[in-house]
Image 1 (cartoon, helix red, strand yellow):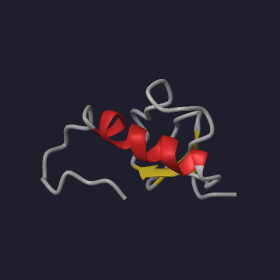
Image 2 (cartoon, helix red, strand yellow):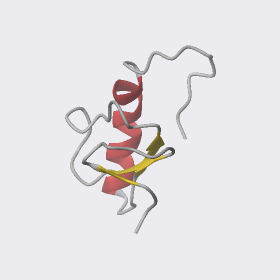
Image 3 (cartoon, one colour):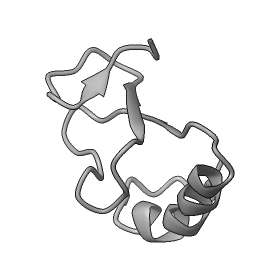
Image 4 (cartoon, one colour):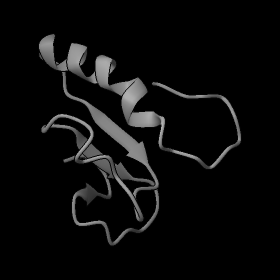
Length: 69
């Protein structure tokens, strides 16, 4: 889990901070889940393919699932 520990709604920093962790997880053969309210934005262009986006609220985001399959 990567968290900035502040109450700010800003999410622009998330993919840049998470990218090395995501890459290391993939290199180790692990699955990666991005768990967030992705109804308005998910970092599909900023992170490698293969990340599973899990929405924490009902969403219309086409690339997110309500829960992992």
